[in-house]
Length: 195
Image (cartoon, rainbow, N blue to C red; front, side, top):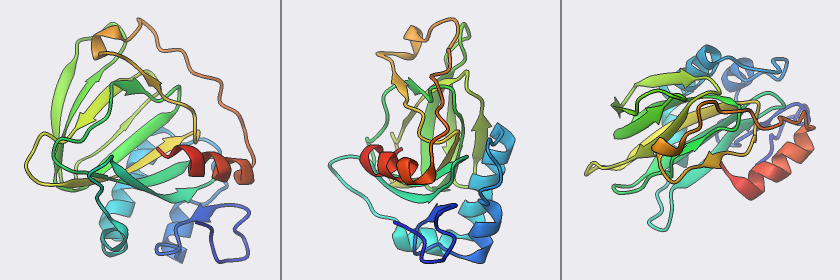
């Protein structure tokens, strides 16, 4: 999915959402995004681009479905869907800051900071949160209705680490080496790996 505009070498936007509005908020001049900036981004995209997101949204019974909405050298933006019973394994984001906003439905998030207790929260439509690199979580849809979420991570495409359980989170979560990769290489990785 590449932008149809001349400056597609600076960012990659989903063709159905490629607009001046999204270009303004995902502008490639920002190398690293804070958890608050990521939360503001996912919240803005979920609230201001709802119609476009719902047109793209799909569901898969085989696995969670996703679509890349945007990619720069500093941030990646995704739309994910969750059928009842679908979820992630416990994982961290390898040193990236992250965020997600619930577009539709509701999800349960179990999360833990190193050496802290495991906590649980229900995330309802419109809920948005940003988190730093020292956090692990597991996101599940134990409810009867499908859900959809908008996610962002910075730096982009840092591998996640999975755990057998949130009890297995180490006392400190060291960051994986973030590589400053050109957008063309980030596109290749995003196409192979997904969120």
